[in-house]
Length: 265
Ligand code: IPD
Image 1 (cartoon, rainbow, N blue to C red):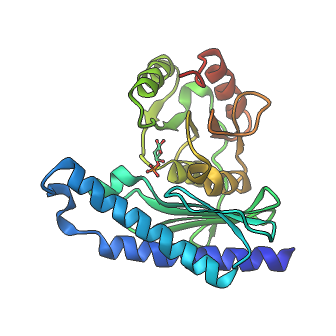
Image 2 (cartoon, rainbow, N blue to C red):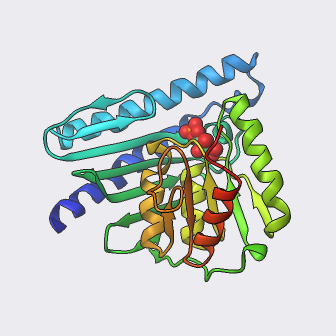
């Protein structure tokens, strides 16, 4: 099993490095001034699809029997018990605007359990990686979450989905939470937000309505750095709710989000 994990990590790092370099070097300079909003979005969508194709092509070469689930529609059942979960650009709007916080996120699951996570942010020159049971690293630095502060002193990351009604509800939750924490950050990439908790750059992170490709790799990285992750109290993280924080703060934030009904639309 250790040899399998090492192989999956090596492949994930290679795929993320290639796709990330392609996205960084191939991003058109004038994206921000594209003729219309939709023409700019189309270019990004094309880059997103090309990145996913690049990753799935490499996976098909190296491990043809594995399953694949990708944001841009890649869906292969597979027969090996290994499934790859891919976000070819997490933080698409940051990518569109030339903000540096976007990443390629790749996780490998074995019989449903995430064993490898890689998040590569090419413009920031940062690669987070984790192997189940072996800790989390930023580039080559071992990571540990920041000790839990009181909720009132916590810097809390969050994010918003794309649907207007859901965003209105998410804003209500933020309005309630903001006087009760140090401050709120909206970084624009859920994968990096989870890695920021692992790195001690955020005390905590939560979001409603993520997809597995947004959180699969970051979840393992946060846990391997010592964070707790979950959804509603007693539940694993899911598209309903994702929460990550060190023990002590995690329970407080999860309880507060439960009181606020943060998983409701
Ligand atoms: C989005 C980002 C964002 C989060 C959204 C996600 P995408 O992913 O992770 O931070 O708030 O919920 O959909 O669309 O850029 O891959």
